Image 1 (cartoon, each protein chain N blue to C red):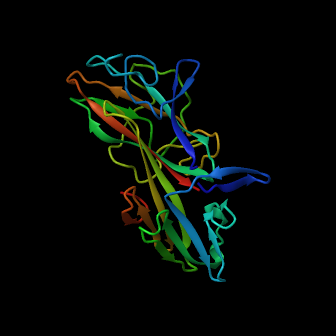
Image 2: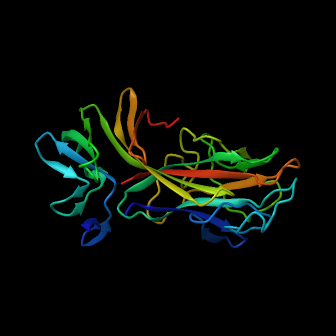
Image 3: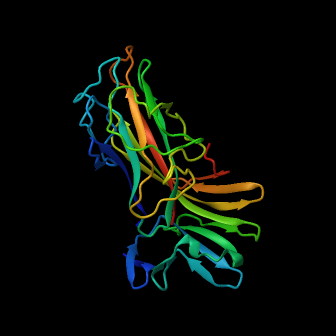
Length: 170
Length: 132
């Protein structure tokens, strides 16, 4: 079996971790993982969704040796109006971010426009914020905070897809 | 189904599931090392390949009777590369999570990398490794 690598989300002050790999990335007006639908916790026009603090997690390295070159980007963008998806992920001057309880005020951490095409190199760090480091069994990447900021001119039906990519040396 | 054993530590093994594409390393002395060793029923990691005596690196499809193998003739100045690209795509309002695996191999030399990417439909791309 190839390595089992999941996307996990952290919520709450006490940092409850949820594997959302088979779930969704529905944004909402509450600090929850895998929100059933956007209608459950709608975000008002001109407001923000709660931040999501995501990480890669190597659940089981299995027969593989290591994981490396972690990337995140928005592979389809059907947001409406001036809606913005912000992230902390960058190919240069990267620094790891410590977990903080998700907020719906303007994020002070997810402040970069998310790439809309695959980055050339890694834009998510490992360990002390090293983009070229590797992950082994049971290890996590650095956090990937994201926030959807919904504009006053938004319309219903916006959607997006985020892609999370890693290289696996087996 | 054939079970291949992988020993992460002596005396304890896990079962390796066959890959759609698997590598085979052929050496200048006539010996070989296969990711899935059909004789010993062992799984080998890429780092076990002795590149100092590598002659050919072959990627072979699990249905080798249908899909031709791909051979890289190795040269001493090459640094061999092999990895999987895995992409997990998650959506808001666009359906379930999708997983995609691309088999990548190639080499690095003084003029950069050459990477052959075997896509999910088994078509092939040749890139410099940047995917952009």
